[in-house]
Amino acid sequence: DIVMTQSPDSLAVSLGERATINCKSSQSLLYSSKKNYLAWYQQKPGQPPKLLIYWASTRESGVPDRFSGSGSGTDFTLTISSLQAEDVAVYYCQHYYSVPLTFGGGTKVEIK
Amino acid sequence: EVKLVESGGGLVQPGGSLRLSCAASGFNFSSYAMHWVRQAPGKGLEYVSTIGTNGGYTYYVNSVKGRFTISRDNSKNTLYLQMGYLKPEDMAVYYCARDFSSNGVPEYYFHYWGQGTLVTVSS
Image 1 (tube, chains in turn brown, red):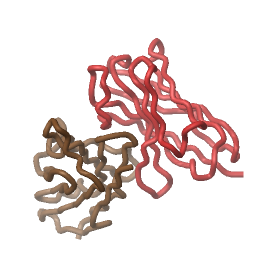
Image 2 (tube, chains in turn blue, orange):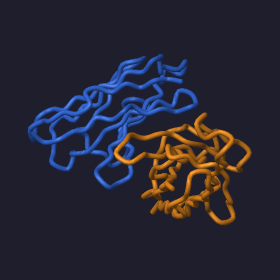
Image 3 (tube, rainbow over the protein chains, first blue to last red):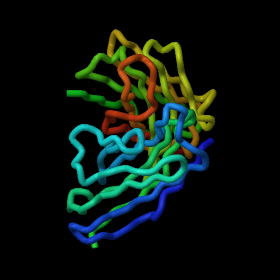
């Protein structure tokens, strides 16, 4: 199984500042199609997860452009360029390179 | 509007059974692979199972293989998860989720999620 490791476990960022979340996979998620099989989700308290990013960097429709995904192979990053109060949540990466699908352990983002 | 509504959760004793349902609306249910994902209290997300558009393809994570059965009724726009031989470690909120792709081939990332149903396994 592919192991997904997120860091940090939690981070506190001031409003308007940048938040950076890292996700590392135990094997490359880059397929021969030149696509990276990685998604990011946001989960607010008491709510189901919400898809933010897929193919490592494609923003889902309606997701604010302050959210961006980058990286390739085994190392990926989710960046919130200017943290807003409504961005307080736990963020998860998930690979879909092969089954079983696996998620990272989550990163809790709070306001400093 | 896409809607997924899970039901059927509750308290069950270890070794018991439970059937979860997920009623779908707002999209052409038969065109999408569907998934179950669970989340133990205070923990992260764990993928459980996938079913193809016509039920001919199913996949289970090792921890539930042989105990859980995923199925769907496209005439009722409903997804099911029959859970048996339940263990305390199966205790979680169970989410149904719709695949992103509508072309019949799953892409295995989750476009829409239900609100979840809580399964408690305890004596």
